[in-house]
Image (tube, rainbow, N blue to C red):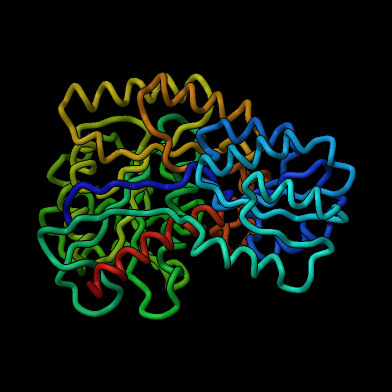
Length: 416
């Protein structure tokens, strides 16, 4: 499968939010929101809610639940501003009302609220209101053109080219290996039926840590394969790889640190071509350094993930990266920028900084990866993907959502 690929992912995992004077006074609403949306929602007070409606990210909400009681009547002007702002963005408004007079309730509905649910919430009332207003929550979308052959499918014949997904950290410690390893795992386990074939290739020849992350030994067979790619075939590649829990095949970095120019562009092309012929998804963990064969991987990729953090070194390196691609007339439009340890939903200051960073670099940050905390910091010490050690971690859930969007697209193309 060869073509340009556009990745458009919502810049936050949040799909909805509650807005109230004090959300803790509506504990049943908290329970219902968690039941319906898990961790894909946030809560704001009236002042922050009105400010957030002016942020670009607000358009990504599918609905807001505004909770009010009799004490909020003096704040109805602010509540009305929130409702009108949400409606202007096309965001549905569900009103949660506790002990309001009929006149006060009528006033809020006239301001533009789409639905009304009394509080305390009757059984399934919030679910019914959401279903009435929303057809489906927004999801990440991938557009993968494939003019040269049939789409990749799990199992079956190998008469297709798999999807190549490189991950490149633009500075040290931004989480590129964490994303590469866990994206490969989530791709391989996203479907219980007819699971795709997934391989993970560590091309950081000097300090690659995929083997450490998954507690796999570094084998001499990897060096032998890289030394003579001209003789490589499917069997040779398979023998150099190791299986991780019978889910993914992994080509680790060699046992000894090698110079990055040990591989030529032809060598890397041979490895990628063989892997994409044998597997549905080929995830490549790239070195931080730009080398000649970076071009080879970029040209083979459908989506080339470039990871940054919200700091000066990432911004400066991203600028150098962009200039290098443009100077060599490389297809930089395939690069999709991912912000790791992204600001939380309610961190308006952090989101503003991220927006200014993107504007100064003239890029779109299309994948926002939340800070997974200490669970992620120590995840590489367990020899397991995040799924096995912290299944409910917000970072793991975001990577799972990305993997499922890829899987859904491939399935849709297969049946088209």
